[in-house]
Length: 88
Image (cartoon, rainbow, N blue to C red; front, side, top):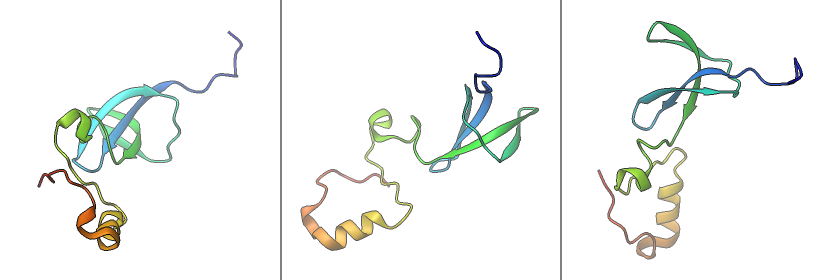
């Protein structure tokens, strides 16, 4: 392989902000934030949905509303919207 053409592949901390789940994996993603985790200083990437909070993996229909989109949808369509039960 040629030197200097590949991105830096290192350990990165991903933080699922919807349920405060954190996990470390290797990635080439860039981040300006760093955090101390288990004795290591790692780049921090904040995400809204991971396998710990996604309805497909959890089996629960959970609404992650960061910008009022769900409420806007309900106002626009009323009872015509989602027919699935909402987990609390």
